[in-house]
Image (cartoon, rainbow, N blue to C red):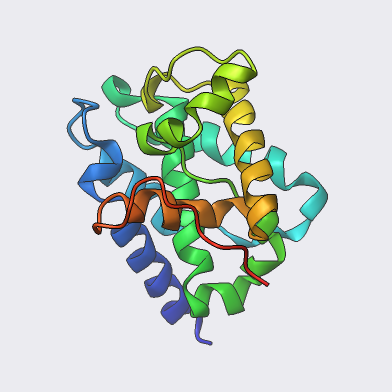
Length: 187
């Protein structure tokens, strides 16, 4: 695949991933555009070279994206959500998946956190002592880790990677599917 084509596909995935609803309510003009600009040129190769350090590399990418956001909308939670949506969509894009072997890291990807995902895990969050969901803008690495652990447990019972929970929970709540319907286990 030509390098220019892969770069164009990555730019496309960044544009369709970071739509206004991703940063809705943040009251920071230019937030979505800044996230898209960062993701358009972010190098995917280093992030995926060593699976044992994927989590720390994702943390580094989130910190770098946070700094690239407009000051008024700068938030680790927004940066992490944008990265997680971008990675999910890149995984679902055959050209990027093939070029960077994204499926190799599939089980390391996180479900993008927002109020919909938090509501789906509210009872579990209370059981482990997490307080009420305060919003993605206030998400910290520690709270993210707790929610991601809850997602890993749920995904394991369904036989899928945690990143795929979003297509059931977020998408299902918008397309008329029953909000509380859980998908069947995949074989």
